[in-house]
Length: 640
Image (cartoon, rainbow, N blue to C red; front, side, top):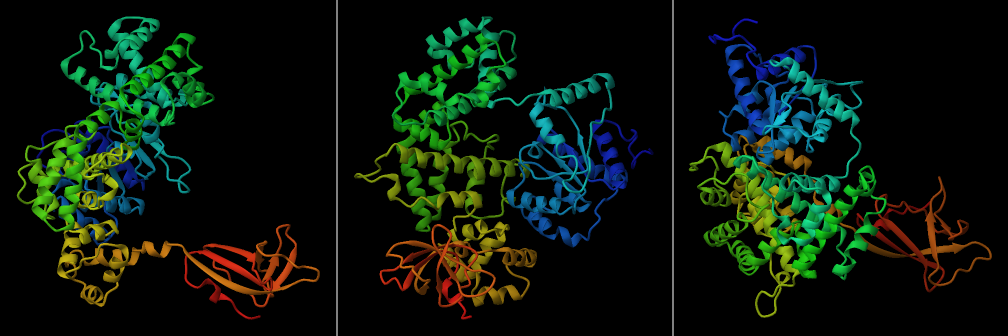
């Protein structure tokens, strides 16, 4: 292939460019392609490379639809990323760049385009293996490694399962470009494919326990019997052990993995043994009873007897360790918060201060004291971010400034010293995910422990529903947050829509009154509101919005005249069924299925809901009750 632009090296020059060359060739053959990258950093590198090669003429645009179909994604992308971001430039030529660090509103809009088949190429991070509902005719696995380790077989199996669109393709292609070290890379690929085909279903709990035993065995150079004895008799056994010759970086990574696995193990045990009156002496029998015939037991049966004993012993010892260190209420709080022992104890330690800050932050939002609310939320975040697993994966030096800017509803790309990608990653990871999780953990822990706040009051006596929506949506304005929660994805436009109409709704009924008001209707008709750029997005939201109140079930009662068939004289309270045949009056059916009466007219029953009919005190009538959606269901009756 000729050199692209003025570059002196040939194209493709590496595995990344070989992947792209193959992708563009497949697109010419009418395929859709998913490029899977085990690391998010590789996804961003692909975006940069695609734009560079496009400018040089090596990769042409593959956008096959009018650009108007990208309008919603472009509006949200420009709002969050800026129009010059490489992801936006990739979108312009028909390529989707997808990873978990993208702003949620923009990511959702991108996923809508992908499901609609508007974009033919997707470069995705492990989100592809973690729930992104997407398939293509071809999956290209760019790399088999993450952080120097080969990817897990289950992840690989999930990824390659995306090849072939359901109900469209009879089969799919899975490719792995090999640019250099051909024999070695080809062997790695074949080994992974063979492992995927051969692997039996494995218990996640077995794998957790095995990870602890394996590291202890490597560290102690001991057999399983000695390891089990060590765990039983040593309170320090649950600290990640050192391994001779391990580098500092590897030790830190493995320590983090150990601690994360410990949280998962604790959560599993608290779930299994959640019975409040279970004593420590009953733990072995309880575990044995619960796990009988489970996947854990079936998988364990494939191992030698000594391994089975060691695995079961580890579960019992960890359970006893938790029980010795906690009360029943504490364990309940940890389980409800979805955390392990260490995290739960740290939450206990900050509980008094955190409870007050949580309550005050809601009060300040309720009373529109913006600065006090921001200061209080920053103090809460400072407490929570120091506790794993609520610690952000990236914590910029100016994170307090980013959080304040976010809560004020200001444009996030302005006045921030951290680069935009790091800022957005912090917002998605820390503010949209970890901080709300930490706040919820504080709340449910306080409930479970029945914490006293002031003068006998508990956490349930206070308004606590404001701070999490404010943090998740990036505004202290309750109405703006509600509008975004209802599905309007532009943060800036939502804030403007509320402010420009002086709206102040705090519940769904008030919100529906506002959205259906003449003022909002007249503004919408101008097709330049909330802004010119977001008008189409607003109209799409209006068309798709379905008020939740329409799903609320109501109760209606009515007395209905009935004529009993000969020799029938049912007594008060007898339950009967109303039934319509193809024509004629509504029939009354007894519990044995026989007709015993007929109504004076034919009723058209509502499809959604439940009817209950019993004989009234005056048995010439039925007392009919309806539970369901809709008003006055008995007015649907018609005379025959």
